[in-house]
Image (cartoon, rainbow over all chains, first blue to last red; front, side, top):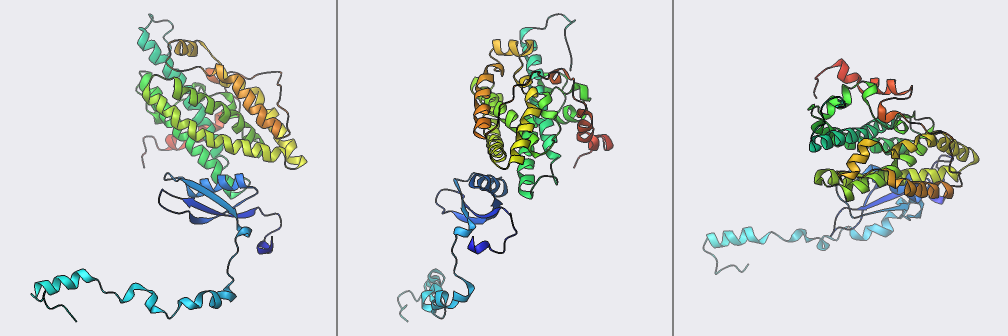
Length: 113
Length: 266
């Protein structure tokens, strides 16, 4: 258990809990539970996360089976998303409002910039 | 409880109502008392997750008790509410099976008690859902069967885990089974009340479920590497209001708030 080397001796394993709340949605990460086996993890996940609602599906995955990008690797992995504002739809102005103004001002036929 | 033994024979419908009230009170008391016992684990369970699991089960059981006591109070002619029945009866008036009031013991005893009760409850509530003419009661049976099926899963898994765990956990699990097994027969007892109800098709009797119960729990116990106890005695009396010594304090605690603040609401 490489990722859990700091664990207390004999502590039950950690499991990540994924819940699919309803049709049309993907499984969502809810949190984690500790349990000695998969059946116990499912039972505890049910007790903790689905007392309410009518979910479709519940998964548990051993936390040490999740491989994550380490904080040291943040730049190589994530930096290329920064400083590229053209990738975001922020430059678009909402059209409907402006268009209505044009109409109200009677400039319907003259809307070229 | 009222008895009409000395009075003139009641009309058929009235007697069926009275019988059904008695039967539903027994089922409701089973759920209420077991729920109260499980609540005694709160802050004392082996782990915080198990604390939550046991209290969730207790909460479901109290929910079953609410429905069953309400229906019983409506049918018995006294007009008592669920709260009246839960909080104002004396211990001798409770008609739960003795199994449900057995002290928690160690965790293995509680698991053994859960194993016996949940396998019985799934079978009986399923029978109620399938074989009860009253739509409200059949609907309750269907809902309760699903909930106790999850409680059964919890008990099955822990029986297996403790049985196949360490020599110490297996020893304790076997001791837990040995402790509770003499109290399991009472769950399936059939008296005149149940015979009349079953003959009229009002509700099924739990007695026919016993062979299947034995088959199912034996399978779980055997797979856990444990031995199905063969007790030489069977405890009875709960249905008649004769309880174990430990029952008094349980009822006193259950009713303490109501005694301190009669009629209090929040």
